Image 1: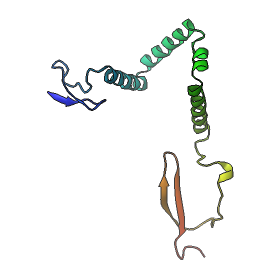
Image 2: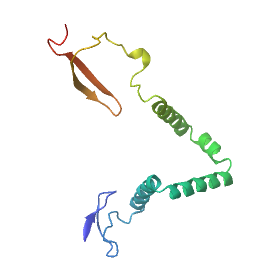
Image 3: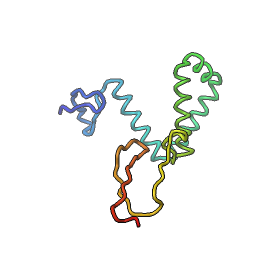
Image 4: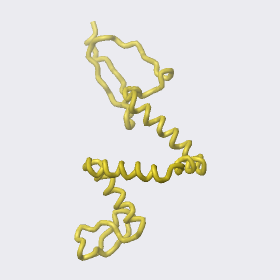
Amino acid sequence: MEVVCASCGEKFIRNPRSPNQSYCSKKECQRMRKSLWQKSRMKKDSTYRNNQRLSWKEWARQHPGYWKEYRKKHPDKTRRNSMMQTIRNRRRRRPELIAKMDALEMPRIKPSGTYYLVPMIAKMDALKVNIFEIAGSWP
């Protein structure tokens, strides 16, 4: 039976012994399948996750200068990783911030009353709203 590969989108014939096969036999597609399986397994299975960590530590112990050499050979990737880590750290530490402190102007609003919150834009972790006073709700 012909099906479409979940990775490359090309048609292929399923192996009769694997009725749920959704990836073709290309190397890139099999790599994608394994990667997704590993991510899923890492989230669900704590024993698997611990074994992976121990394996990574052992590999690092056996290859002591690898990452230092890698960073020397790939300065563009090193810069990008540093920038992305800064972003991840900021999100982890202060998730309530959605704007730079000096870029945020706080308008004076009435402290109490009934208001409508009307969504303007929605980004991944930010929601901007307009606040309108309901007529007659403020003395």
